[in-house]
Length: 219
Ligand code: B12
Image (cartoon, rainbow, N blue to C red):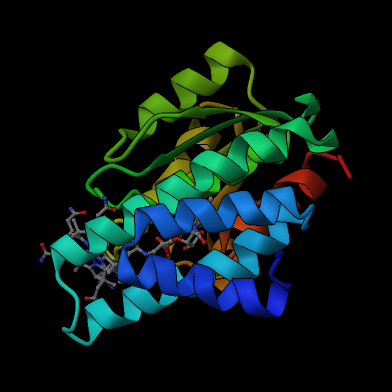
């Protein structure tokens, strides 16, 4: 029997909160099999669970082991959803090339990984440089692969300053007009993006895909 969205979405969140890899994977398979819109599945099914995990950590109720199992449950779901999304029309790889990473001094990569997977699922060719990435490296890679967009993730108020420095670096090189620069991560905001002269900000992975597509001139 197939579950409705109203039934399956809360279970997806619960699987992430509980760090239940098996359930996260099985629910993703069920959603893919039922033909649900998989971007909506990520947005309304899994992301609320991840947000809750962040809150539980802030309240001191979750510690590192819980965070890691939750991140692994999310990975298990994305292992099913990513390829399924790629089989759709979005998977034609015509959306463009994107270089993504978490800025230097910052090791948070759960959100960045999610954005990278979703961009890939949304039809972009994604070059993920990992976390704690030197600003110079983003430019090198973008030049090397001919990317159109560079995505910088930062989770700390201290490291978000690197997003600003990056815009300066591109200007110094005369490359600012060549790339669309998107910024994200918990402390970033639309206002911050405007203040530093970035091309855009998105608050979650689904919004990031839509933004990247509209900036790349895609649908
Ligand atoms: C998990 C976590 C960790 C894990 C990271 C594991 C990993 N591999 O990533 C560990 C335990 C290692 C860690 C370490 C630290 N952490 Co920490 N961590 C978190 C926590 C709980 C969750 C972050 C997360 O993964 N959220 C889930 C993901 C899905 O959300 P997200 O990252 O925001 O990403 C989404 C969006 O922001 C967006 N997005 C993300 N990137 C991008 C990029 C682009 C271009 C776009 C468009 C969108 C986008 O889309 C994503 C998906 O929807 C947050 C609290 C919080 N609520 O954010 C603290 C938090 C970020 N950490 C914090 C701190 C202080 C630290 C440490 C300094 C702690 C310490 N004293 O050692 C170290 C930092 C070490 C370092 N140099 O980086 C603070 C930051 C405070 C601040 N304002 O600066 C926070 C806010 C907790 C708190 N309230 O104190 N942390």
